[in-house]
Amino acid sequence: MKKTIALIIFCLVIAVNSFSQTEEITESQYWLQFKMANEQSFKSSKRITTKEVYQGEKSSYTREIIEEFLNSGNRRYIEIKKENNRTTKVELILIGKTYYCRINEDLWKQSEQWCGPMTLSTMPEPKTSKLTVEETKVNGQTVKFYQKYNTYINEYFSTKDKEGITYFHDKFWVDNKGFMIRREWEFGLIEPKKVFETRVTVYEYNIKDLKIEAPKIASGKN
Image 1 (tube, rainbow, N blue to C red):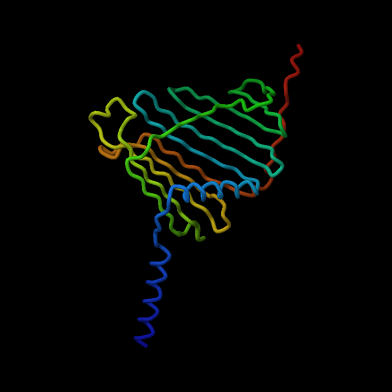
Image 2: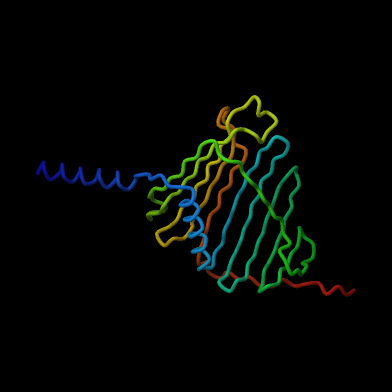
């Protein structure tokens, strides 16, 4: 009986250790999995909700972005940004190859190209970089959890001669069907510890009654 109990305990320990084992991966492996999970997500209708908080030297803001996609290709984008006691709302709808856009409560306008905000950011070569993957549980299901933790020489802020290394921590989770279900990232200073920006993105799939239709356009006549 004691041998049986000991064997059961040993098997449980092995199972836990193998389940929680962390494996180091390369940069190319990391981004390949990220790309594949994003491509897989377009096989289903979905809603992507992103919440971002930024606390910089000269400005701070919060931003919420909601993106909705249908299998037909129709798409809706809503961005609400709060900065300096001012709220700006941008809405875009794509039907076929036609874009419809409006800012705040303005009238909808039709466009042949993307008419919303565009951001482009670049990062220098990291001082150190560690990328890993492991299996974990989210809401009772087994998922793959990817992490990338980079450090950089502080080149971003006026206090760089007094403060140390900056970091960028990127994380995403992929379910057992290969769908992206969550992404988080954080940017800040390591010492003294200071977080400048956080972003959390949640993916929802096969949403019932999700409709994306063209808005009414003003005729321009008096």
